[in-house]
Length: 270
Length: 270
Image (cartoon, rainbow over all chains, first blue to last red; front, side, top):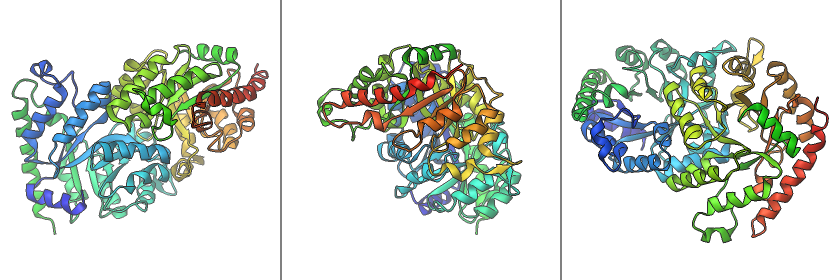
């Protein structure tokens, strides 16, 4: 998907909501367990219920991998089911030497037709660049993560700048705002001002609004740019809003609530 | 597997060789493609041919994931085939927030019975610790990688020390030399002296001897400790030593050559 197409969708839906599909066999409503593929059935109903309000879906690959070959099949079916005009993110946090990253890219871009993959920066340029060789596909590189351990190394200062800023500065030359985004946790919206000086035009994928804390308004204030530039991810607050037969309705209602908070913020664009 | 059991195996086989199973459907001998599961068939013959000389096998997960559900099944069969007394490494370079890392740990440790997983450090403690909660299972954390891009961030200095040393210092307190190892690329054996000051007792997984350059003798001189402390990985030089029907014999012969170079180095232990 191009940046333009993503922005068009954001304008049409008046939303920059990404729904995380961290589908856990232990958490989905019990009545689904009788079906042939409970994981896919859950995802299908979540997608049906929320696609009016979501511009992106982000399956967390660990949840599928934990189920082995059958989980992988549920993921493939989920990807085939998501409408093609919605942006898809393989939240995989991969990153390896060049020829290996190429294979991960093939797995997610070619085989499963994801639009993007989250990638870890530690191994540097040749671990990231193979993902950038695919037309209209995206790398979403880890920048500042919202978990507690994010502090352990991402804020180590070198030449007066924290590591995450070095990562953004250096990596932004490997691609462009047309094929790279960055993960920036919402628990630290105050850093968005500094980040926007380094990468003013890139989209940021922002987890941590909702169950992980974080503040939508502060994130928009400091992080939005003239192409919106934000994808706000919500997972548990939407997909696990209810654990009974009404889970899809409950998910729809939570997604709608977030979309309604987002709509006015988009009016200030341009 | 315990550290003691690994060391026993090293002493018995007089080897600290790890064989990488980066099994690529495009590179394996053509006659295997007629079989039901060419990837597994290749691995099976490589394992049969090299297990006398190898103390560890390291499937590179990307190669299996690139084939989707069927690749995942080949990997499961490979894991069932590897003799239980040989150490196994899921070269996956995972790392995510706590609950997600737990799922990756479950996938590799519980479902597939790997002894260890390679993990990326960027997301810090809570992305690593879930892997340390399994008895006799290991994290192999990225330290210094041998790829060109390894220089991009791993050598950024902070408080007078490069990032990779911060990673080793901080992370070594999350576990112990009984459940953590580190990846240290062989292209930089001179760093092993500094590394041994920080983590004298840990095992190091050293890729880059062979096809990626590197020098076995220098690595041993600077990196060996009283429990050997080294697993030297070789992949392409062994598994792709020949691309015809004699590939297993050729792999055996290359593995034997490396083992014969390793044996005298182990005589100096203690």
